[in-house]
Length: 223
Image (cartoon, rainbow, N blue to C red; front, top):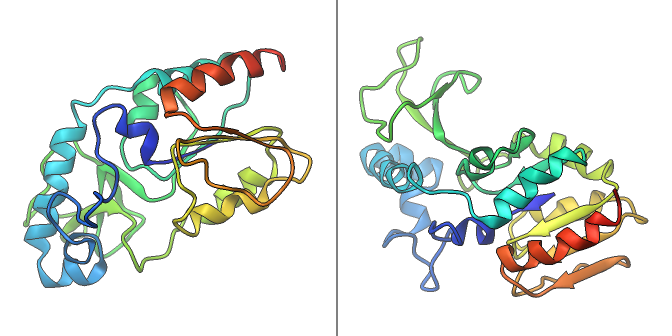
């Protein structure tokens, strides 16, 4: 299962960029790149503090809950482009975050040192065990996506692939559907219904909560 910003939008979290190309009034170049961090780390930290402050109170919606409920009958592997923890809040246990996790920080010296955040604030002067400044545990633009190989391996094993709330335009995540076996059915739940150039694709041009309700009856027949 591949999920994107559309599923979180129904829980009140804004999609990555508004229609004017800005994110909460900021260009992504100012808050979501390594260069932005080098130029103004205080701004970057405050930006993510505000995202975290908003996200910490967000609740999973019906689409998140349906996905979590499926674990009772299926081996549900979630690959998400979202940095929020709404899948986990809903009860899903196998969630791979391609673009990092908002509620975690990591060392600027050793990327393997990742820490859970207890609250919503991460500030200048907060350091890892090596004494280096902590940064948001987010994969920024122009950075590699460390989990992409694991995600591709999961996609290659899929018996059913469900794509929810993503336009499939952001790479490398969008390329994951290319790893799904040719005989595997793909269900796409998104109002824009991004086209996948292959057979066995069913499009549900609905928002996540509505489309996932429709899929419940389809997957019930696979039990």
